[in-house]
Length: 505
Image (cartoon, rainbow, N blue to C red; front, top):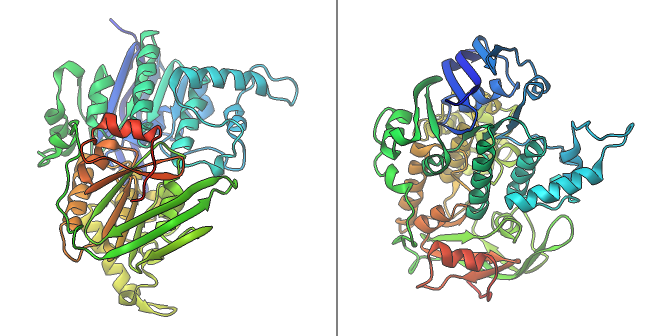
């Protein structure tokens, strides 16, 4: 019989008039990986925030190793052996990776000097063990979202907690990194530690977890051994009903499922010719990239983080000027950024104001400096309804929404404004199974329209790229590589991601 290292019972947590947790339970055993699932807004991040000392519950109890505790702060949680990898990054942007890894560490310090060399050596060993590699001397603000996620994971793993809590750590990791991370989690569990993992991909939870808990509307509706559940069972528990086609979307497609869009006859909406661009650090990000995107097609772009996908997305969305080459982009461009909290929404603005950020130059919603706030409000209500954004109303602050509901808002807003081109970076990051299925169906619908926009999908999820794209490209070392027509399995794309002969797209 395994030992219960943490037990949360009847936990209640309110944010103003919104009840995020309405009596949730979670029991975590040493020697197990415990998967936590639920729709966006179900209360997963809030429950983990209580366990990690980020949030104080309004009701219920928390026990660590059989004793009732009050986790009033992250430091208090650390003192009880709970380490939390956050969904939203908590790094200091202006510090280096190594300095962020050193924050909060006192062991080995001498006076005011932190043991940087000891931390560097430990980080090197951990990166070798996990496959989660990141440049230790780079400044965090110069890193992409994938590298920042790796730093968050490494920061907690370096402290070696007996209870490790990870809130969506795999959202922007490559398949190889996910596999390495899961292998590490299994080894840590075998040492007697308790691992709590939140993920939106059901197949990931089923692959690594010993036990699964499902939350719905702030309550625990299922807690069972992995052997007792399957994908369909978990989907029903999460949403209270079947989601058409969702179970199939979680299976490995094996090879690219080509969409039949209007790509062959559509007019070009984006044209890049021998485009080069640099990163903020001054290094080359794009190297003479040529790409044509036609109306009605989905161009899927895969690649290991740091190979230029980020800069390509910024050039295509008009947010980064090219250093050289020719760029022609149509006017109606929607952009789903890689980090919703930094580029997608402003937490202190309400939903209407966040809609206005994207619609202010659309003649349907005002003229010049004068905005038609009534029309923007109606558009915000329409997006909330269509994309099922869980909030009391359009006057709610974006910062009060769960991460998944923020993503729903951004996706809905940008799909609505993308009349010519949609540039989407990991568009389903943080979305639950139902929302992911909806977004995928919307992209398929747009791709099937003769007058639909061209779509550029940049995703770390190879299954997503393969399932949605009319053609697939890979970015490696700042260049685009065209996938051969008969070589579009995950293994083929993975080999191209590691390098290959570049060709124009």
